[in-house]
Length: 85
Image 1 (cartoon, rainbow, N blue to C red):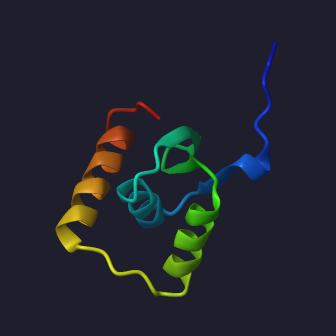
Image 2: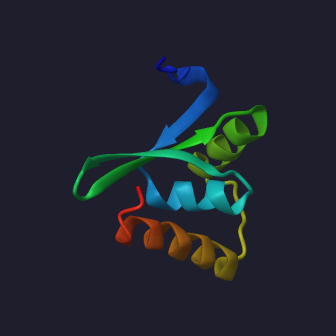
């Protein structure tokens, strides 16, 4: 039996920086989808706080400690390089 993903349950982005910020804020990467050798989309479990975080990202209202962001970005890049996604 195949379980289909409900689009409303997940947030998907191809933006590496946004994925890093979401991950830094405590959201696990639920799944990835390699679109081509250079592009990956990241799926996160959606809730009201995540939607607000994304909205604040696009409206440039977020403040984040640079070293923490760098750490999260390195983690996601290591996933990409190891081909685990």
